[in-house]
Amino acid sequence: MSTVKLTVNGRAVSVDVEDRTLLVHLLRENLNLTGTHVGCDTSQCGACVVHVDGRAVKSCTMLAGQAAGSNVTTIEGLAKGDELHPMQAAFRDNHGLQCGYCTPGMIMSAVDIVHRHGGKLDEETVRHELEGNICRCTGYHNIVKAVLDAAGRMQVSQAAE
Amino acid sequence: MYETNYHRASSVADAAATFAKGSESKFLAGGQTLLPVMKQRLASPSDVVDLSKLQELIGIDVSGDTVTIKAATAHYDVSQSDAVRKAIPALAHLASMIGDPAVRYRGTIGGSLANNDPAADYPAAVLALGATVKTNKRSISADDFFKGLFTTALEDGEIITAVSFPVPAKAGYAKMRHPASRFALTGVFVAQTKSGDIRVAATGASQSGVMRVPAIEQALKANWSAGALDNVTISASGLLADIHGTADYRANLVKVMGQRAVAGAG
Image 1: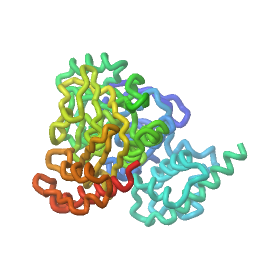
Image 2: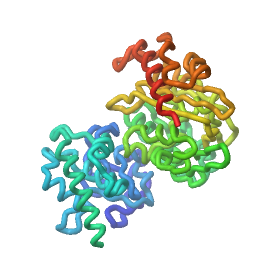
Image 3: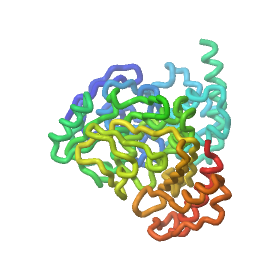
Image 4: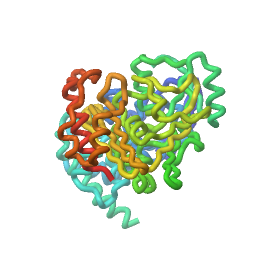
């Protein structure tokens, strides 16, 4: 057992876990942040994507101890109170989900894609960069639409700040 | 995953000392291969020694005709490095095609080389460019480093600290990506050194891991063009055959990827 100290969604936490604990299990089982999902558990599907120090990574392929001292953002940390993050709002408005299982990982990856590409984002880039996130319902069409929509909204909200 | 003890190293020397104390230690960098293997219970190290936060192992340096990438530098950072893109664009291109974006944020060049997966990308670049693998004990030339499937010249407890690539006159990399795993079904790296040598390496093709391709090297030596490979025949003997492709298919891929690599070389 080790004590892992990290910041999750802006809150400093200290958790005692076995050394073999994966970050996704620390989030789900110790912190009850069950928005982050375990899909394939083989780092293919992307349902477990969270941001660690600003980078979208697969939390099923990282030991909790590796995140010690890091700043972690999960899907629960995106909205400001009742106001959805522009990416969340765009997924809702564009019907970018059906069963919703992949959605938290999709949104976390998509936010990272927009951060990296900003206003230069096009459909081809979105489709290419979402390859680490698998959706079995939508056929991706509305997910891609949502990401492009959100990219515009995020530019606008950045400009307003 | 079986139980293990996690250690975050404070320096390369500390990592080596901690490694030596464990009964069956493993070094952990990005963990994009080791952790899946541990989760499948195919590996059960008593101790994992984390190198990924060591600042002395992170960074890219270009000086003169050498690009040095420190071992714990993530694929994403190599792919985005202006210095690498300028000096060896094929290397930045290769890094941009490993796995998916989330994997590229975590995976490292040192981890890829130490693991030496027969379908990994970096071994092709290291072998074709004639790079030097630097460890906490010595320097190992690419020609001496790769020893077959998942096997390298590294001794137990030896740590890769950096890889030095001589800047080539021209180089290119092309791969047929497996659509699910994104590993190379076959990938070919072609390089023309500044002294005029031609070195070509293929990954994902051979049963013995990354390999030089003498037939393509000879054809390119005579004429550096994709068309020069039209009449080259690659033997299927010793090539991988699995559910994804026969040995004959991979033999053809070595040639076709070689042609694409030359066509895209910069």
